[in-house]
Amino acid sequence: MLAHAINAEWIKIRTTKAVYWTSALIVVFSVAFGAFMGWANATSYQMFVDDGDLETAAINAGALDVAGALTGLQVFGVMIILIQSALLVTGEYGNNTAKSSVLAVPKRWQLPVAKFIVYGVIAAVVTLISAVLSVLVTKWVAGLQIDDEAVLSNISLSADDAWTVMLRMVIYSLGAVALAIGIGYLLRKTAGAMAVLLLWVLVLEEIPGMFPRVKEWIPQYMPFKNIGNAVNLNDTVNAPWGQTGSVIYFAVICLVIFILGTVVLRRRDA
Image (cartoon, rainbow, N blue to C red):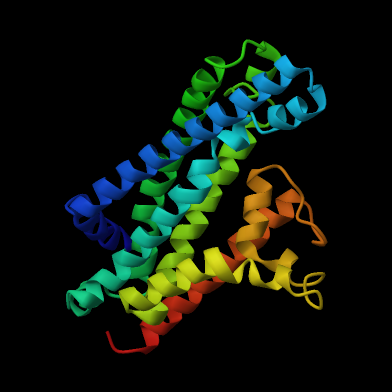
């Protein structure tokens, strides 16, 4: 039964020290980087206000919002979630425990689904905690530099679209878990999975925009760019959909790769 598979995965993950460390790193890096960006933008804002350059100050004020506070979560948090999710799969193959895991469930598809449910919940909770703390700490740090309550109110849990941004960030994390698990089952090797995930996020998403012949019709279909823009409350340029469409598109891509990984698991020897 799926419930038994979920319980087994929960026991494995709960007794894995790496999960505790990576979860802590997500929170620490997310909050620290968000606070740093908040301090930098607030300092610049106040400097330009003092110099009378209100136009440039307004640009810095635009970065002092909930989405800006979650920059660390987008940059570092999701990357750690991708790596940890892939390791849940490739680690079993590296430790030669994958076969026993497969034999422990009546149907193979239950194994990746159980991994997604268990770690997906953990990732979602850690993401939400990181998001809330990032907003609170960023506002506090920014408040040490500026006194403008109108600006500081944009870095708040009660700010307009604050919870929309955080909900999209949670969806971003859940999609990352599904995608990484799928990649893990497709490749089965830690080095290969890490290379694909890191190159995809850091390199492949940027390459199409560098070539004039394709930058008008390929970049808008890059999944991580879509979800990143949606979290930042921006439409993806040239995309045939809005922000909600970008979220759905990212989720569909992640689901497709997760399903492909599940199909490969069912058809190949463990």
